[in-house]
Image (cartoon, rainbow, N blue to C red; front, side, top):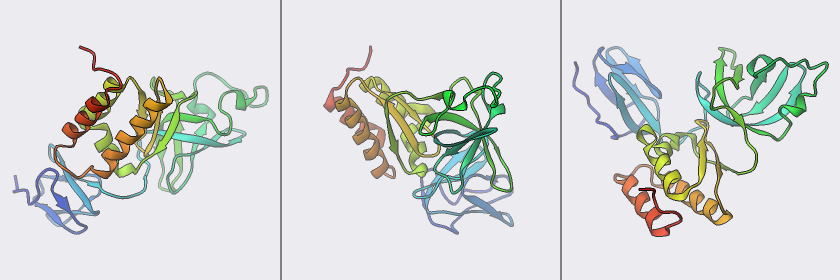
Length: 234
């Protein structure tokens, strides 16, 4: 296997060569040219087995199949709902993407999802013509009631979630706040008090600002413990 020219979390700029080998595969924000794999964006190298990716430091959300996203219903049409997911183009939730049979001629579709509703759904399809379809069949999918919405840089979502969910799980555990992070950079949260929610927003914004530094998890843990909103369960 070829020798890696960049290590995990190394800083990279567009055009940087990560490896000269056909034994590695290009992942997100990378491309192959000959035997080499190169970075497409400014960011940090991420290595998963034989797949090389770059976590972009800045960027907009580009939908991918199976992404879990948060979106706002912006229109109701005869066969489904138009949903703003913060991408360059809007997504569509068809009637076939919701549980149960719904006849738009007999049922008020706004009773299911109304304009302004925030939903947590799954990207079911992304076509070559930039048509994006959402499904609500996954057991985690839901319509939100209450809570607050926070917009973050989609490129920072992996850092906010952490490895195997470690960062976001720690925040939930130490604050008692319910948090769902969409891969499109939209976050829903609900805490016991408005003060708790404000604190969690500060924590998430700190992660965004310092996403590139080493030891961020320890720094965030200290920030959570110092605030002492809720002690971690033994």
